[in-house]
Image 1 (tube, rainbow, N blue to C red):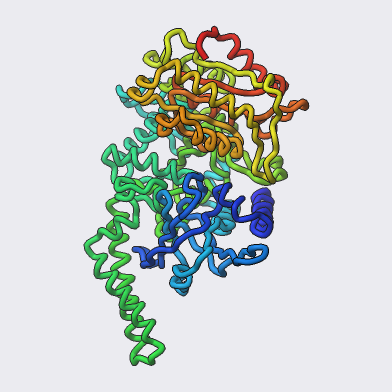
Image 2 (image 1 turned 90 degrees about the vertical axis):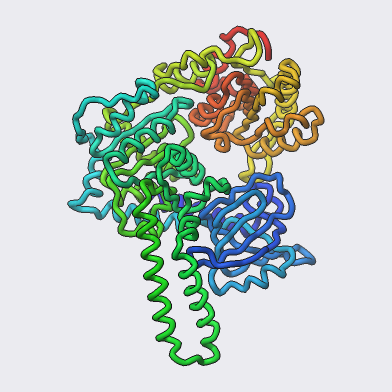
Length: 614
């Protein structure tokens, strides 16, 4: 099984990384915090022992910690070799906010030892649970017989016709015709529907409308996405529409608005919670006294446990009874809170980025599925080359698009980009079907500006360099030129206007090493000091779902062989070039890049546009 290949590959890679990679490398990659300070500990509303952890250095490095990820503590021993010693337990991230993280740990953890420890660190651990959940879901799907799950499985993998309701289309004057059509198609479908949303076409707006209308027909729906960030985004939009959302799992951005619809916050706010908390405390105290041989221990314990369970069941019944939307990540939908819960409709956002196995986790609970996403943008992350070649990267949404083109509805009007930036992407990826909304067609910053420019870096005389195993590539001369180009463009616009209009900029590179190098350069440059809040530097994956007024892309690759590595995946470039609203500047070695037909076409397209300002 391809998923097994990926599982063993990732597990082995993690083992090697743990054994051989130095702490500082892990910190730079965003996979570790070191040193850390452990703050207070407490029992959370789920009765788990939770601890605060604070990052004390390297605060500017973007990290990969997020809700639900397993982590482990380690200690760096002083003296020769600075050996790393790992603690024997694993913890789970509850949430991260800036340089503060809350993790849940096993009940018997000696918190005081961690609080007193020096040279303490925290790193990501191999995510065994997610894989087990996916394996279990696949097993259930394969064994399903004579039920709704078996029906959906057979339907998705064949060209068998899907069923639909028939009714007159509903009108939504605030949506454009293709969005209106998509909402109607969702309402009509009995089995499956795909909302295909190219960049800037208002996929989230359409999806929120479809969910809102579905709730006029159903009491509750399940909404899932691959990432916590995507779940947060759609949950927030639904809350803005007045929908009661219950978010299973903690949000990526920890603010009051986001926290207010999480299960934990709602649970803690329930009027019966103080009583439950007191009983749980009594249970813990009773356990502590057991060593002193207290009488009637078992009877007291059973009575308290039974009362706690009764209150917990009552609170949960109320919270789930009131909620119209249950929202979680795909893997998070396996949470014990959702056991035995059934839903008529499941909406999967970011479906083109989700592993097929992950999608089956929530599908087990539902009668019909609505996929939303864009299979012409970022694919799922696959680390094993054999698994990738074997087809693990092919998503369930892609299978449905191939087998059932009649259930796909394309959103055709984009509201983000200047027409000339959008046109190449529309022609290459969407058969020219995506059009620009009239009000943004000619949007720009400077008069007579060229919206899209390619700065050829082949004359720089410096080639790409390789930085460490799996850390990626770097092109220092191109990084310098990227910032020089941005500085010149900013000078043309003028400081007062940039600050007054808050003109924001994204600097994108496919390689993490280049991103970190660019960030360090910007920090050193006095010129960019007033604009730091307006400049974001990140990888393509880091910019998924975002947009900026100005985008610069540093392609990095520069070699005689025309080797471009994972830039061969054009979907990655589609994401990069469609982040820009008004100005797109691509910096890349023409002679290296144009050996690939996609980049040749892109270079020709950009050079066909009329040059004026860079």
